Image 1: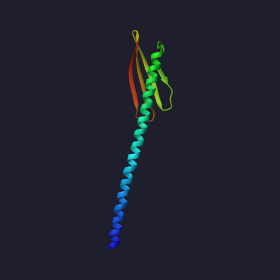
Image 2: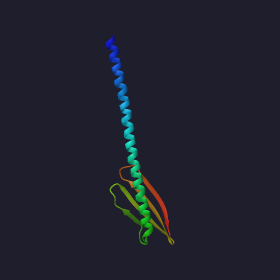
Image 3: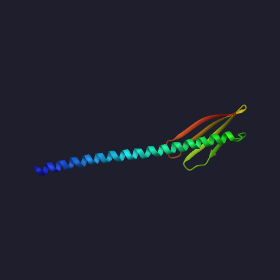
Image 4: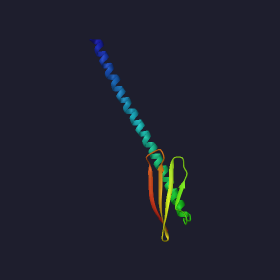
Length: 108
């Protein structure tokens, strides 16, 4: 009878620690994914701001599309002339992750 209780307590403790270990690993994995997404979002935002400032500084006559080559992101802009202004659609999208940013800017 004593061996049965010892075996039962051992099985319960192993199950409890296994479930607790799985919960801890899931939490660490989720934290790692969130940290990666946060880093990529900040980097995408910096790329978008750079492209916006660059497009405001250059002459856009004759340019319809502008693309910047990058290993992690698709960075491009569509330029649409309207009267004396230009409408700029700026896109930044991560190639391997679900992060994308868009902004429409009017340059006079």
